[in-house]
Image 1 (cartoon, rainbow, N blue to C red):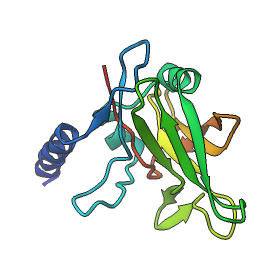
Image 2: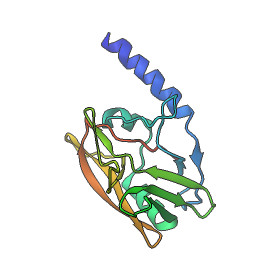
Image 3: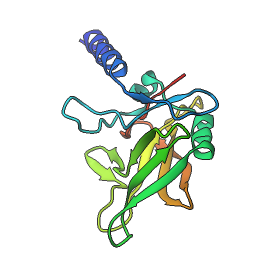
Image 4: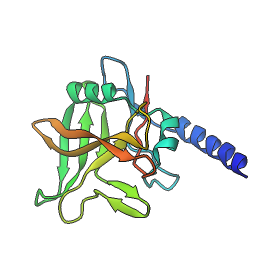
Length: 167
C-alpha cells in the first residue's frame, strides 16, 4: 500500500509540475518563476510539507535574491493599511508574479494569514541542510518598491505554499 501511494503521489506531482504556467521576468539568470502558488484543480492554493514540495523545483536563496534585486515590487494592503494581503513582483519584461499573504498550515490551523491586521506570504525554498527545519521565505511588507522579507526556518512537516522555478 505504501508503494502504491508513493507511485500515485509521484504521478500526481509530475502532472501538476507539467501544468505550471511560468513567467519570464527578464532575470539575468534566465530563471522562470511560476505566476502564482501551486493550486489544486479547484484553484485553491496547495499547501505541501517540505518533502513533497522539494520534488517540484523549489527556488534557491540565490534565485530569491535575484528576484528582489532585479524586479519592482508592489504591496497589497487593506483599506486601513493594517492587513498585508500580499505582493506583486514585476520584472523588467513587464511580466508579474503574485505572492499572496495566505500564511501556512500547522496541522489544520492556518498561521500568518491576514486577520484584522498582519498577514505574511510564505513559500518553501531549497534547503540542503540536515534536520527537521527547512528554509522558507516570509514576506511581510513592501516598501519603496522592495519586499520586506526574511529567510526563516520552519518545521518541515508544516504545509506551506509552493512556488516553482525553471531554468
